[in-house]
Image 1: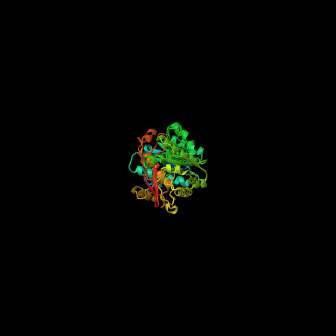
Image 2: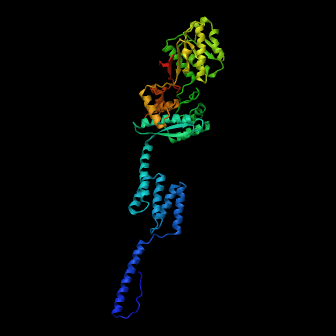
Image 3: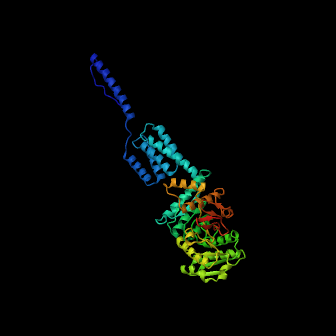
Length: 487
């Protein structure tokens, strides 16, 4: 209570009026003082400022739990002070950053009710809205099925990764538009190294992914195999061709089949589709790829109780071209078909070599069916004046007239700034779609993949044999108008 000393004044009329005026002044002073006390600005203290600064430092260091407790200590102090509202807002933001979305919502709704006119109200409302979105994302992610991607982000390989990732992403979006629970892509960088691939596989396994797509290259697949085998997580290699990556392993699958598998498939089509029994083999000695294809072809013949009509080993390019003149006429005439195990890194070089070799068969007066296990799309029959039938195997084929293909191209171009999908984009889409087609209660099992029916994708066919390698290809007849798919 504020007291005012009353001075001793004469009690006449004038004095009475003076006394009344003085009393009113006292009342005004007393009430005015209380009103001012109620409306006085919050008290500041060095201690409060220091506590707030410490909590803010923890927040900026992303130590959100510690920041929350620091801010709470500040805003719970009484009476109200200059940092009360700021501290309560920041406490709510710390809870949101920590992932405690409901606690953040509750605290900031209390803040809005208590300080409805605060200049921080709009910010509090924004945090509440973000926390509600975070709750929904968490609900979806908690129930999501994780699909792992182990691909390189190194400069030279980045275009490959971008294409495969874009294809996988479209497959996942297509699945998520029609199914629950949703698929979530979990990506890890292999750093284009064996150690990086192993680390990426370890990380994905620890994330609890249902399956892993990748790594890209055979040596990295070998390195990543150990953690996935230990944790019994399916890993599907989309590009690797080494025939050893699945050997002795149960959970590593290979989409891009080995050269030996190509040879076997070509032999099967020669027997089953073309009805050939007498087939010669020409193989390039000292070329491991050529020898692997020829070995697979011969093994399939043996599995059908057939033997090659002849096996002729050739040397370099010029020897391929001369070889029809070296093999005896009787041997050539005995062969209904001849398998050319030609392998070149450049398809154009391989096509030219095939054309010049086949010309010499024609000059010898023989017209065997020519077989191959790699695509020769650049082979110009008109240029070489060739009329004998030529067939080959390939793993990749896109029917541009297909509605599914057109839809894919349209969506891909929209998502990638008008860029058309390349071969790897199709492969990424097909491998991911095959996996999602075979989900079993949110998981992918080895047995499920081995027992799955043929998957016919936009660009590749997939069916795994007992050795976890893809055994399905396309079979083409080469015509003057280019390759024509026959199987």
